[in-house]
Amino acid sequence: MKVTRTQIVDRAYDLLRDHGLSSLSMRRVALDLGVQPGALYYHVANKQELLAVVATRVLEDFPASATDPRGAAEDFRTALLRVRDGAEVVSFVQAYRPEIVTPTRTLHRLFSTRLGPRHADWAARTVVHYVLGFVAEEQNRAELVHAGVVEEAPSDAGKPDEAFLFGVDAILNGLSSTRT
Image (cartoon, rainbow, N blue to C red; front, side, top):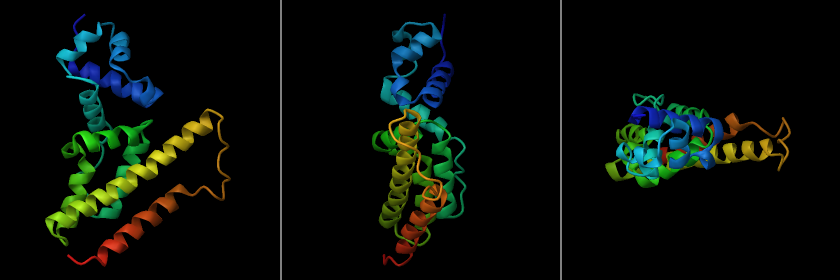
């Protein structure tokens, strides 16, 4: 059987979405596609490159045309939450190939209208790191609850949307008082 890059990426994305990062390996993708692991390396150089392509898929619904940083942060969070371990994968790719992480480029563009290029870069990275950290904690907590390791937070204590926006607003308010 001949395998295509699209089939490889689709299967890797499905494994991530359905089973999490711990189940995503080149060997598992190959097994699921009915090919030898070596067949994958013609299309993707290594697992890191596969994760970069999968991260692009995780973020494909993120609107690069966002018009405000708060909305961009919300859209980024939404995209990450759609996929199990989405924050962990995108965080890795932020370190490995930061130029492909759309939210960073979008936020840089939005901040550059008021901040110089260097500060726009720092501001974008600050918001991206906050979103990645917040979502990673949400996703890790959900996994721990699912595994029965911890109990779900009481309903009055768990207001993740409000808590998330509080943090975004705190960052944005701080940035608005930043001198460049």
